[in-house]
Image (cartoon, rainbow, N blue to C red; front, side):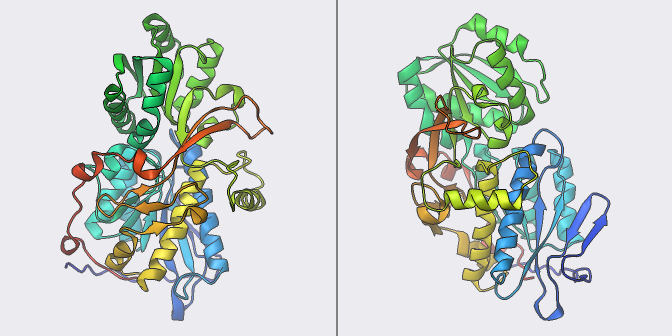
Length: 425
């Protein structure tokens, strides 16, 4: 097993000191020589296509870190963190990960929305053996051909949502489908999974329309939708593009006909548009109105901690970052060490109770793909909201193994432990 030497961390300041170095913010939560804090690198977008989701994800990871530290930290050590804007750009993400590992000497890396960004961070993390939690990017390739021994994938993938949705949509709305695809890795791989799954149930793809990233006028695309007259539009569009599309679909009175299957709707992408802008059938991993133990309390704690944010309640993106950070702390405790290989082994195959995750079914980390297999919720726009935050109507919940991607394990080839550099911070 290869062991790489890592330079001593920069001398820590007093507790709570924030240091600035260009776009890099180094937040020393706690530091003393006898128990050096465990430094986490948070790779959340603050600009670009997924800036809103990136900052919501960051609220989740930071809130979890604060809760962990309030209870004494991990192995008698507090957690500290640094953040950097990955700009929704793989090249920037590569530089961010290299700098966090080699200059700041982080012990772990957490965060990503765009799948190209997650893949870039994962490649750098594997090179150095740094355990990396991809919290929110959901291309099927992240737990498939782009899997890494050090990388763990926490969101449902496009294949999970397609498996949960496709059969019901074909049977309910019809077989003539049109694919609407964001023109980058997540969009392409999600549409591919949708095509494969829906075809098994008799769907026929009339066409596929590519949506360039940064599209702000959907009228030519929606005119094509009207001309093709599909039974179902299967949309894999995200971030700022989704916000624009939602509004323009409503404005052109296309929200009810044809039927819309929107693989997954991330809460930061729709919140603020109003419940009338949420339409069709779509997937999610969590909702703040779930009638489950712990949900209402988390909403209250979120609102107390983040009273100034425009997103009044937590959603799936916040949730994934929050839960992943808590599970990282638990894995370090189970391992009894920050040694990366021990932490990886503590995560592989780990089972998580539904009650602890505030979901309907128990979840587990697939030891073959490092993907969290979890409850997938099917939802629609809410025609009877109980308050201004109640956008979704949860239609059903799908057990993890029923939504599982059958191609995932075959496509994923994790590196051997002895080919993964080892370290302990």
